[in-house]
Image 1 (cartoon, rainbow, N blue to C red):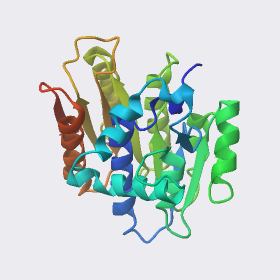
Image 2 (cartoon, rainbow, N blue to C red):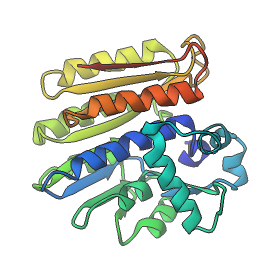
Image 3 (cartoon, one colour):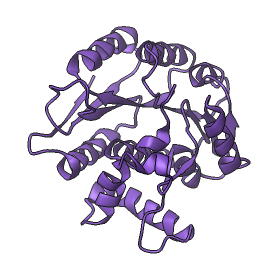
Length: 277
C-alpha cells in the first residue's frame, strides 16, 4: 500500500476526527473504570509538516494551518488549543510545524490508569510509532482488526478507533465484521469510525450492512460532513464519522463539530448531516 497517514495529516478530516475523539475522551473521563483505547490503524504517532513528502499535498495548509489563521469555532477550540500548545512545546513559536496524530493525542488526554494500544503494519511508520509512544502506550506491528478481537477480556471500558486507509477492497467489510464480533464479546464496547465520502453508493452500501449486522446490538450516531456535492467519486468530497455506543450527550456535541468543520472548510453547498440509528 502507498497510503500513509502523513500525506493527509492535519487536513479537514483529521480535524473532525480528532475533535470528535477529544470530545469522547472528555465525556468518558467521568466513568470510574479505566479506559483502554485500541487504535486499529495508528500511523506514526505525529507528523513533521515540513517533510516534503507530506507537505506536497498541501492538505495541512488547507486544514490545520488555515484554521489557526482565523477565528476558531467553539467546538474546535479544544483541538486548536492542544495543537498550538504541542507546537509551542516542540519549539514552533507562532507556527504549526507538527501535527499530533491519534496515538499522541489520545495519550496526552488519558488519565493515570488508562491504556492505549496502537496497531500499525507499515515498517517505517511502526518504528516511528514505537519510538514516539513507548512506554506510555503500546505499539503493535499487527493487523488492527485482529487485535481488536483480542482485547475484549478485561473489565475496563473499551473504545476502538477505526481509521483504515481504504486501499484494500475488504476494509468496509472488515470494519463491519470487527464491530459485530467485538460487540458479541463486549456489548458495552464503544467505537469511533472514520470513513471517506466520495460517493453515496459506497457509503450507503456499507451503512446498510452495518444496520443489518449490528442495528439491534448497539445505537449508532452517523455524521456526514459534505464539503461539496458528492458528484465526483474521484475526489474526497467529505468524510463520515460513525460512533457506536457513544455516551448519550455526545450527539449534539458531534453535531456542532461537524457543522463547524463544514462551515470552515466547505463550499457554499456543503452540509453536515447527523442521524441516530
